[in-house]
Image (cartoon, rainbow, N blue to C red):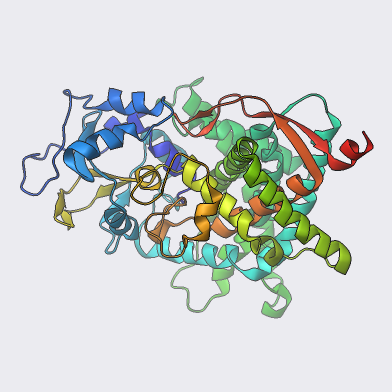
Length: 487
């Protein structure tokens, strides 16, 4: 579950002072990486923030890496931090063997998600829940079933966008009309209707409090977000209680395979190998929290892919050629699309890989050490925070030629399997379980966009702070190919 939360943690400066209570360790302890602690209390916070507002937010890391090496120490709002730009060190942190590294979140996030969130729990319970969800979300059965739903949603939205021509639509906002219903269907089997409308409205209010001043007084952002979560919980609790009641009336044969993530977690009640059933309130809260990464990361990736393709006509031409060939094959055979068709589009997957690498939607993973740990000769003292910088690796010339250039062709020679230098979704025990569904959704969107429509995008720039997004939400004009032919 590293999507979105990982982005948010890159700006912990808004609430970081509450972490690492025991951070008054002696920084001259042997083995601690070299670096600069900056000014009293604020450390190097101002430089950290300033870099985030530039077109090269990784410049904060690059400057210090050139001076101190790939692993160095710094200080953000009084908290000592070890920063790693080394893919091998990052891998150790993400793998977290022995549960040495714990998730480190700002207070506002901890307030909103609660102690029992999959984002905060650790150890055997986390591994159990993560394995259950990952097994379901990666299953061919789910992909086969959800493909048709994604196609219907994508086609409907693209058709509606073309009707407003010559007016523009803001792509960054509009793609959420595709992704949110799909995500909620996968998690809760909620179809179009009042429940979906309320969930989407309240979720938009809920996420505003993920990064804010952690004050719960009436009228504050955090207070409003907590109230929005209460409204969402009422709907989710009702849905899950009904699903549990219906399930108890069925035999194991009648139940069949799980339809959604809730079915998977509720299914533990009948599992003789389960040491303990998952409480209903645990399931309810975690369903809401699982919306967070999927509902922000996938729309952002889609938006930036369109942006990069707009700026690279040759890549767009190659993408359209590949997808038109698949469309032609399907028209000739009269077969429906299968999820494997979309995932077999090699250049399309290269475009997605390059978008993820260049956009760095999850730019870093933050952890806190439970005890002293040494990695490649670098000592990380107990209680210190660790920042595994994914962006620094993705934008390093050592691993990628011309790293600031959008070049999907580079992936013809690079494998994404077991590649320590490519970790757009984090990694290890907390690798987002919905990675493959996200890729499928992006692939389906790009296919139907480039084979059925053309677009003109207005000038826009990428903003990297506090999270990655388009400054103007990428206004575009969408035109169906049949309209262009008639003209």
